[in-house]
Length: 282
DNA sequence: CAGTTCGCCTGGGGGC
DNA sequence: TGCCCCCAGGCGAACT
Image (cartoon, rainbow, N blue to C red; front, side, top):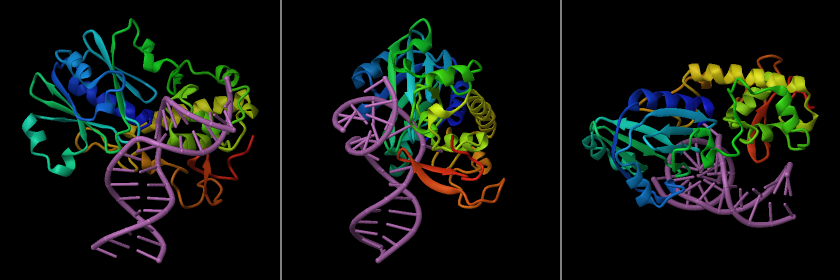
């Protein structure tokens, strides 16, 4: 589900709520959630740790604890929610409770719950490296989509030989981290580049347009609290509003610029919307 | 190495 | 109402 803007909002929410809080006990009920450790070790290593630092790279959340780092990837439907007390969790009806796969009981009595209907999300616990960006799970993840150092020359060089359509390359997290299916469509619309364009055909100017559009769109979306199309939310009832600003993704009607009907198609198995008039194939 | 397909999971919506 | 099929904002393994 969430892409960089949604993950950033989750991060801000958790930092406000959890900074300095200590974990008393962890209970994981879906073993696959703990991706790099047996569940028992995952649970026991986290006991007693405090939340110290909060970071994001692409769609990954990184929590620096006392001497461990906890990494979370929400994939399609992962959500965090904090309840005032264990009783509030016990009082949930079966439907609300059945998709909670991890509970972090905090020293102050609150409970951080992780909920994930499709069970795609993953968490990792590691000894804390000097720099959190050296965490094993983040090796191979490219620069964040909002990294000020992201530049056109570098992207041009990195993708010089790639024949895949540009939309597929924007979804490749080793090139740019944090763009998913919704924002890829929006970024290409604003850049006026067809999602089918052969990536190696893009010029430095094209890449600069993509970088500029990415910064504008993701920043606006973060401001708006992210995009809530299906199920994205964080906390209790926090929902974003950027879905109201989408130009092509999921749109049935006509292009806002030229009135051509928006085309719904597939690129690399992913549902894709674009304007065949405004967006030129390179 | 690069590109494509499949599998992981569950629920919602449309068609009959 | 029930059933079946398709779809979903991600990612990695396995394949060509």
